[in-house]
Length: 210
Image 1 (cartoon, rainbow, N blue to C red):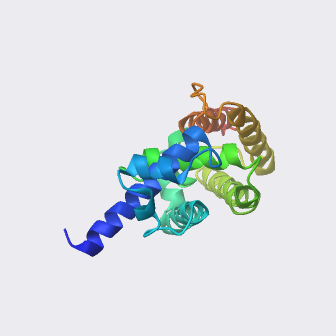
Image 2 (cartoon, rainbow, N blue to C red):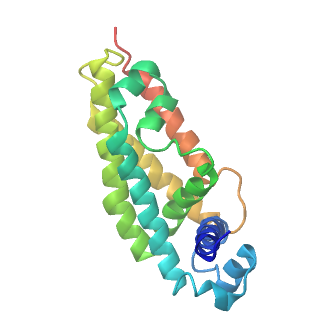
C-alpha cells in the first residue's frame, strides 16, 4: 500500500472510530487520546490527519450531508416505492437505509446528531437546519409518490406525518442524551431507525388507499 493510500486508510479509521466514540461517550467526553488509542496510533500522529477534534466533527457532518444529498438526487423514489411500498422502502427513499459496509458508521453519526444537539451549538444548527429540513422534504416527496401509486389516500396530510416524525425524533433525542455513556439499550441510531420504521408502518395502515 502506498503512503497516500495508507494515509487515506488511517483517516477513514479515525472518522469511523470517532463516530463510534462520540456516540458512546459523547463528543465533549471523548479525548484525542481516546481517539488515538481506538485507531492504534499516537496522539501526535492524529494531528497529521486532522488539526482538532472539532475538525473531525466537521468532516463527519459534511460526510453525512454529502451521503444524503448525493443519494437523494440519484434515487428513483417512485420506482423504489412501486417495487417496495413498505416502511423499509420509505427508509430507503429517505436516505435512512445506509450503504452496505457503512451502516454502523452512519447509525453512530445519527446517534451523535440526536444526543449532542442539546449541548453542542454546531450540531444543533446542523440538526435544526439541514437535517430536519431534509427529513421533512423527504417525507413529503415520499408521500407524493405513495399517492401517485395509489398506495395511500390522495387526501393524506403530509404535514401531519412530518410533525409526527419530527416530534418523535426530538423526544427520542431528549431521552437519548440522558443515556450518554451508560450504554442504555435502545438509545442508539438503530433504535431511532426502528422508531421511524414503526411510524411509517402506522402511516401506511392509517392512510391506506381504498
